[in-house]
Amino acid sequence: MFQYAIGRIIAEGKGYKLEISDPENRRDLLFKNFPAAGGVNGKEVKENTMACAHDLQYLDMDAVMGHGGCIFLHGYWQKHYYYFPHRDKIFKWFKYDDSAYEKPHADDIVIHIRGKYNEGNRADLLVPIPTFVQIVKSLDYRNCVLVTNDPSDALLKAFEGVKNVTMKSGDTMSDFTFMRYAKRLIIPQSTFSWWAAFLGNPEKVYVPMAIRGDYPCAWKMCPAKEDVDLIPINDNYIRVRFNEQ
Image 1 (cartoon, rainbow, N blue to C red):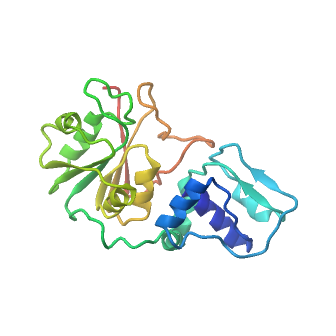
Image 2 (cartoon, rainbow, N blue to C red; image 1 turned 90 degrees about the horizontal axis):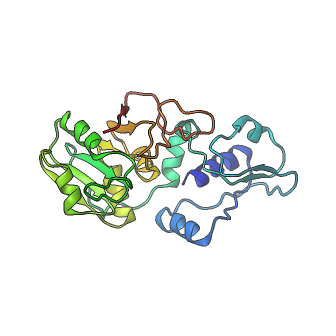
């Protein structure tokens, strides 16, 4: 979704044709779920290619927009400031019929749990469960819903002491829509739930962040030029630093 959005932002800004050459399964996933996410008609430029590649995060937008030739993009481009100024039109590109999907109650807390949880072995998780528990216990809410691709009794037990906890595990768009409608969302270091928040209308998004060994921390409190930098500094996004448990 990042690659498509940044490509379309550039193509429309330059009046260029947008061609998508990702593997078929990724293109099918994009087009199947988001009908408006297609190509862009415009000037077809093949010569004098500027290659912005090698899995980069940073993109020199001034250089790209000023380049007169072809633009080849092959990277991650996970920087909030590329997307938030264009949120209204990105919302239209990724619009889909969500009428059949379940939505949370406005007073619910929704937590995205990314990774597999095994009692006594949390190495697959990007954020330790006690951090989620600490955040939830500081809030008033109706239900606490864990959106996870790996529901288990062990995961539910890890939230012992937290009131009204349930788990939700559906297909991709079902879980995505549920998180997108959350008024208060707690996300791990996951672009899946980041996009749900970006395309939703949350009042608060809580984002645990740290730099330590056991939990891979790609989302840093003070990101450098080539780091992921997805969390804007505003009143809607709350950075919660966690320490080694």
